[in-house]
Length: 145
Image 1 (cartoon, one colour):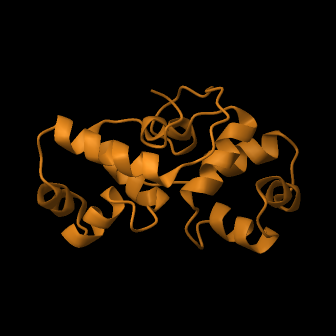
Image 2 (cartoon, helix red, strand yellow):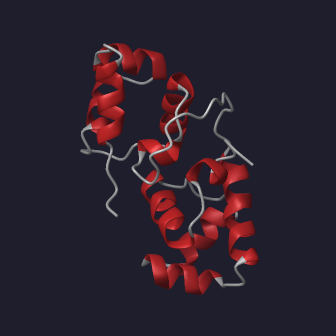
Image 3 (cartoon, helix red, strand yellow):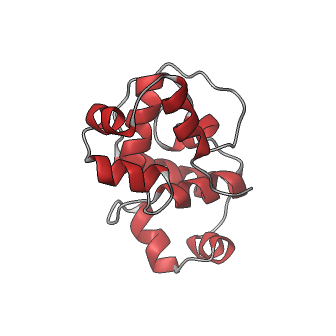
């Protein structure tokens, strides 16, 4: 499965919103939003959560992991909650940080910093983690239990 932001575009267009209006709603510049939606720069997890909350959709749906679209939630993104949930999944599956790092092809130190809340967690990392460990991105971001 490939990381893809096409559904962000489709939902915005289906709701007759320009990139300018969407960027205003999300509280970011139009250039930043345009670059993120078009994959020229990385979309932050915070921006993706605000988008999902605004439209009442699942992050798993937005990223093409699931076809279940609706998820009514208005919880703001909390990076520390995501860090906690990454660690919980790892411990529940009884695997080491080193094993996760190897599987996801990132340095173990980088993964450790995600788990400890010392570094911003990229959306693409959450996508890959979700696919490999069969866990919802909505769960990882605290949008569902």
